[in-house]
Amino acid sequence: IMKHVGTGTQKVEEELRELFPGTEVLRMDADTADGRHEQLLDLFLQRMDLSEEVAAYKNEHHLPILNKERERAILAKVTERSGEKERYAYHLFSTLFELARSRQAELISAPTKVAAQVRASLEAGTSVFPQTGLVACQGVEGAYSQQACDKLFALPSIMYFKRFEGVFQAIESGLCRYGVLPIENSSYGSVTEVYDLMRRYRFSIVRSVRLKIDHRLVARPGATLSSIREIVSHEQAIGQCSKFLNSLNGVRVIPCDNTAAAAKMVAERGDRHVAAISSHPCAALYGLETVSDEIQDSDNNYTRFICVTKDPVIYAGASRISLIIACDNKPGALYDILSKLAALGINMTKLESCPVTGRNFEFIFFLELEASVHEPGVLPMLEELERSCQSFQFLGSYAEV
Image (tube, rainbow, N blue to C red; front, side, top):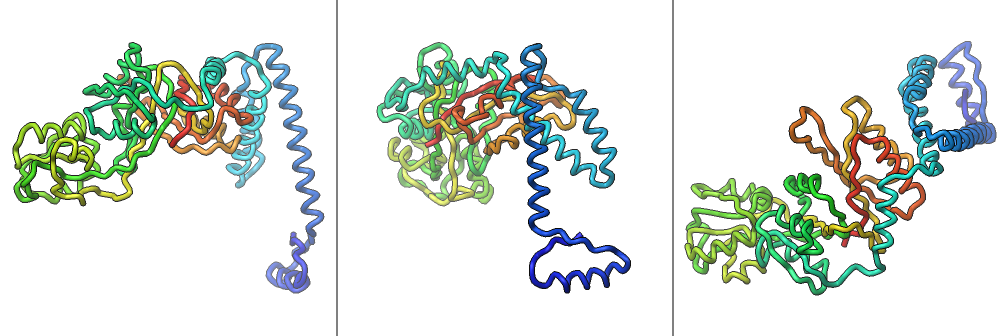
């Protein structure tokens, strides 16, 4: 079969006859190919119409959208008939099933927790993100969390807590309305402790911000690099400066709660043999000087912070969605989830797996999506995830600044 491509067709046909003697060469022109595309589209639209009828039946009889046994039987027949192309046929029909289920999810009116949460969040939101509020941050004055807070709020009132869990507890108890927490770094990865706390505490992400990180080695005035014998900082900052630290000989590296707390500790000890990995504003705040400003593994070093609150709120301009999900421990379980996103053309910006404490080889997943709850099909997709996943937690819909 040869597609007609204009001039030179006769020559191509002769070459094909030489290559495959005794084989019939059939021509298919562009109009014929377009006709086949139209036939395929017509069949697809008919199939989607039938899916809508099935959705009405399922809704009337309170049946689940997913009928895995029926889908598995059809896929078995399809792959059996497809020969060496079985995996392509399997993928095609799996995609058709997912598109049909996505359409049915839009039409079926079964109540879900996520739908109620999204509606309540939209009603509680306003067109403008708040400019002030009582905000919980981990660390002390000068911490990167404080800098992120100042980017999120014009006039924040900040309360500091020693540990990340203190921030969550302050929000849970109503002591603070908002909390600002680091969630991931571009060069050192996720802040795993915060992810673990996200699972344990119920809250809503209302905004996120990316902060340029500029680590420096700071110490008491008069200190030099050769005189430093001890360096303190947060474990994330230590990891982000690992190459520099590994190049030093005879220097002890000690983790502490926060980069700002490290600078404050160095200032209070008054020892020129001790330095901290911290920021330039923090050094100025505590009367320290920069010993070295070329200590980061990467100049393109950003940390992403989230702003959380106890009550679910979605403000105008929200274009990201965060979720925590768990799926069955079986082959293809994660694919079933991701295919729902692919069917709607939703871009997934993050997928983080985390082992479930106390369970062998069981994982939960943190997902971040580029999507708005106002977009067609997004809320039904979230509802279908809630129905089909072993566990499902909607963390919020928000904008990133």
